[in-house]
Image: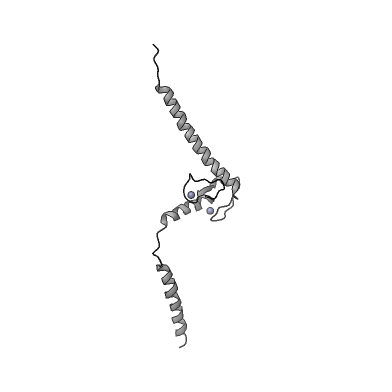
Length: 125
Ligand SMILES: [Zn+2]
Ligand SMILES: [Zn+2]
């Protein structure tokens, strides 16, 4: 009676599945980056730095909705950013605090104009 070793084929298959998934992910990442680079001029969307073949690896694809799995083929979710601006962009998202509604506007609209007006009126003496 031959002994069977069902474990090894399964492991091999699992390995292949993992490898395939990793490859597919890499290809997908390469895919949207390559596509974005074809779609858009090689210019950072923030600082307008221009790129060419020698430094294009510093140009990254930012996902506007921050969902890396959201890759519409028309590129509407992509923005080309240099490494620095890309960092800043994500930093900015983290720093965003909800504004107190109206507080800034009231200060800007009332205090400053009245201060100017007072200064103008005082100039008469
Ligand atoms: Zn930049
Ligand atoms: Zn990003």
